[in-house]
Image (cartoon, rainbow, N blue to C red; front, side, top):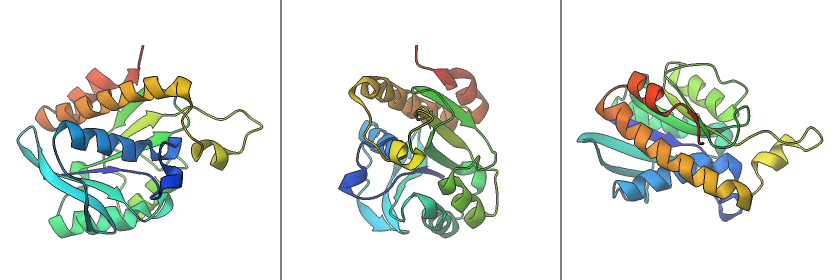
Length: 189
């Protein structure tokens, strides 16, 4: 079984913000694979289904970004899902808008949501799909930037990257993490 978690913040005020791109990815994946993500469990919204004939649990933690590990840790523990089968999808300000970077493990890199997940799983060895949202201008506040709405100019690019994320998840499950990295890492051209 795979746990696919998208990071974000609950609430309408955070809808379509850069920090919620992980939630948007889960929404996209759930629509494409016809998995209803509306059941409340593990401090989040979940949906169970299949991708590439494998059982998956889609998860949108309701704990707010910085406490995402509480939700992911509970779900992983309940289903006995090893870290290597937990795919975390999140925003990354160090990557240009429209870039997808898949990694099988790594540090938190300053991302508080990842710090929480690492603490609750007691491991850095879980795959992550980082979606580039770009960096703010030097004079702009980082929190305001990531919690700001995605601009019209960025929406089309980010929609395309959501398609890539969905395809990368399928490739990851069907073939291998290495194949997904080889085919889908990079910028949208």
